[in-house]
Length: 474
Image (cartoon, rainbow, N blue to C red; front, top):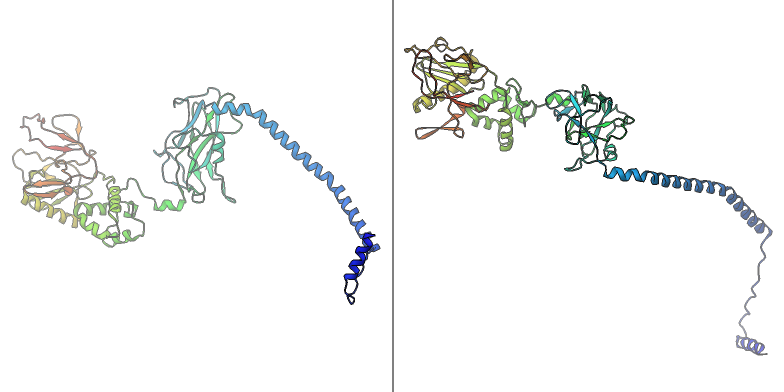
């Protein structure tokens, strides 16, 4: 009854001209829609039925694989724990450092230019052997950035992870004796070379490594791998521009450090007639300021010092040269350093020369430098006729043998000695004459380290008086 009143009240509240709300009609799905829905459900059921075996198989395989991996890890765990505390009982080691630089297609040798050798060492670093057990060793290339700091306690896995293989499409990185056998504690690598440079890896350097070849491990013996220092491998064509250590007198100047072939310094030196190391050293001895000016301000002091230091390691050889004038005779080594001075047939040490003599000798040195190609080579024989001095009494003409290879028989001993005259010990590159300083570059052998001997105990067998003390160099 109350519901009917509420309905009547709501009807009475509607405006007379307001249309009645349309009645909501429920639509009936069409036959086609029902058939489509049924077909879709059946298709989905068939798809899931066909997919279920595949899913089951994949899940089963993954679970089985996981179980196998876990079981293998569990079986391996005890041995891994033992290896963590166990140290190698023996070690492979390269005998010497490598000869650097290393070029592709060139034989790798040790620092003494001998074939590389590998030794088997015990825990004390002493060479040892395994009787009746030859060890096959594989030579590999290691990345240059592989380093354990101050410790060499790398693991085999760490070592193997740093092995460098050849680039795609390239030949094997190493050729030659990449597999050797250690017998009696050592093996020689007679032929080994790189086929590619090291510029393509991040560190730009390689190391040589040696490890026991897989399959030849001896039961109960752990042998740690060997590894060299890191080094750069350059293309073979770079060997044509290789610096020489030490340089020779005949080497072109670009063989010296800091002077590039065809570079600015090379061109400047060539324009002034300085083509060889000998040319450079001669000018450095006679007029170092001029040589420095030729090279110009583009060469820093550090570069200048490096170039001269390298040049001074040059092997001078044994050739000597003589420059004569009516009153003076000077003997030079191969870089225009004075090794003997005679005035009126009398030998003088640099200490004995007066300021007047010294100034004249320095002038003669410059003249001899300008006339170098016309100087007579001095053969090292000791006699008056060679120097052509006037004969004065029983004076013996003594001759400085700057290099110990030229020796003569001493009168009071049957042994060969490097009998020399000349040269005071250097006083920081300068000598004092009166109140002025003299450049000792002309007179002091600055290239070869020398040993001084005092001959104040000298006495001849023929009763001649003992000559005054002199400083000798050999």
